[in-house]
Image (cartoon, rainbow, N blue to C red; front, side, top):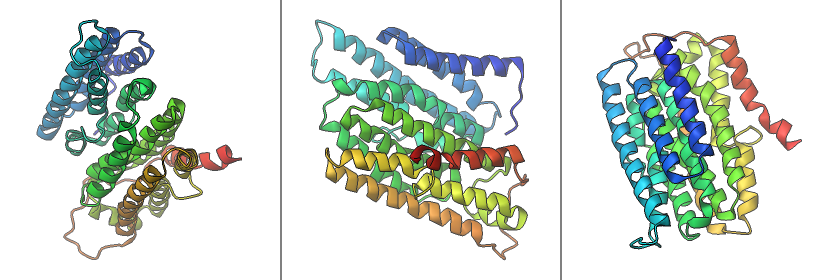
Length: 335
């Protein structure tokens, strides 16, 4: 999708950024709810920018899921501090469910892969990165109110479901959606140790990896794993960059994606050993479909009837440079 930088687009993007910052810095629940509603209303025009039927369908699904999350957020936050609350012990759980729904986290993930598969790569980039920032920050800093028995279940469910469901996909955007769910399990595992800033650090590294990856896929209009086999004949350098970035996203050493997972494993050893096993198992399943993508990319198919992208050009050198930079964080941090 070609993005048209019109005044309306600039106003929408500025509102999107401002509303997220307002939500993060808010001091009361009503202001938080209003900021997230403003964020929702400013993101809908971006989803519908190409006016395709599938993007209209995806924007409606996104709106309904986010509206339900907003309703639960407002109701539970008011009842949480009300002296006449009915079930005061249940309200923090409902509040957490509302944030999980907005985040696209399991078990409230039903809308996220469907929306990701229906929208453009640029919208996918915003949905997987910037749109997750506000609910994730609120959730991880709300740790003190969340029962500790729920956190390992929530983190493990994300890791396993992201791995299992991702192995059954052939669409690249669906695979990236379930990959994001799997990474959420690692981010939420830091809640068990009351380390909210570690969750934000993991999210920042994930943010830096997926943005150049999604931009490359957008520039080459890649939709399915079968289309990746054409990259070898057109741009070997892009094939190498994509392979390394996918392996980094899988968390193999010594690349960037390995560092936050190593920190999580080291910190969780004294808290919850079974959760470490579940997270590693989910990460191995993620590695399976990442390697499947790389193998498909390396195999040059001889079938001339294979669907090829309509637009297939190599990304700019600046994009490749940003990809390499995002992969070079680990040596600097570890040293």
